[in-house]
Length: 270
Ligand SMILES: Nc1ncnc2c1ncn2[C@@H]1O[C@H](COP(=O)(O)OP(=O)(O)OP(=O)(O)O)[C@@H](O)[C@H]1O
Ligand SMILES: [Mg+2]
Image (cartoon, rainbow, N blue to C red; front, side):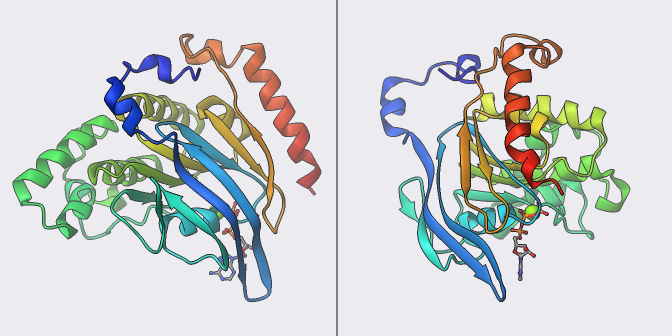
């Protein structure tokens, strides 16, 4: 059993039955851009309420796959089902946290976090209350009236995450959300994300370049090969989540999994 699950209270039996075991099902998805084959027959499952990571060399199609799942671009072949429904375009049950933040530069933190709700015509007082909740959840209390240019890269990522959480999407698609931050900030953010995964019971699909990050955060790691991206291996680290983060990073299962993935990926390093 996943160790993250052990941090959460068991849902009532009726809920458990209603919850699909697979939140995102990608089946034989292929995608080419003019002159570039990005993805070839990719199939993967993301278990509901868990964090799945896509890990692979630069240019192997991770962002492309996330955008296909988000419904922002179309696959050439194959299908994606999210919560049992075939994806034909963007939908309210999915939220995307972009690689490059994609915040509104003219809006402060509250407005940025509440923006998805504004688009859905949620009344101002209600959306500001929801925004305040998630701003606190991602550790940005006190920065509500700041604008994106007044924030660090890590803080902007947190705004993006809070915005995705605020629209109450069930599936969060996160493209390298910690890439632009220093190691200390990254570790703090990782802790916060694990807490959110446990608390919010949402399905996270997360892209990273960091093997350590993937192993530390994930219930399931999907390794992609070099372009055209294909599924290379699926790994499910079973980390003792009751231990402290520092202890986990010294555990043999953590160290062995990091090493095994590195041995798989090193062939792609020129
Ligand atoms: N809009 C586009 N038009 C043409 N080619 C594209 C487009 N988007 C991506 N590509 C190409 O498709 C391939 C996969 O790109 P993608 O951004 O999905 O890779 P990635 O795995 O996310 O890379 P990185 O790890 O560097 O973010 C790359 O060769 C890229 O140049
Ligand atoms: Mg990318």
